[in-house]
Image 1 (cartoon, rainbow, N blue to C red):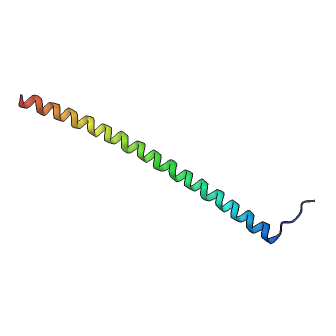
Image 2: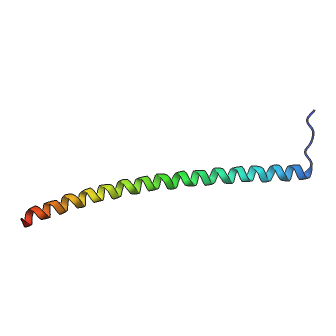
Image 3: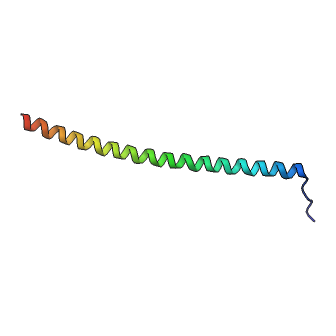
Amino acid sequence: MAKSLTKEENILLTLINAFKNDEKEKLNHLGNISKSLIEVREKVKEEMENFHLNLMSLILLIC
């Protein structure tokens, strides 16, 4: 038969589980930030390519 946990053991187990959940939430949050940064980087790259094309077109018009 399984031994019942003491009040202190239950508190410790609760704290450990809360810490685990907090760490999972932090990792999930970091994953979301990483995805956002990748999306921003792709958007900046696209905008820079468009800017480059527009600049080259302007240079050709001037010449």
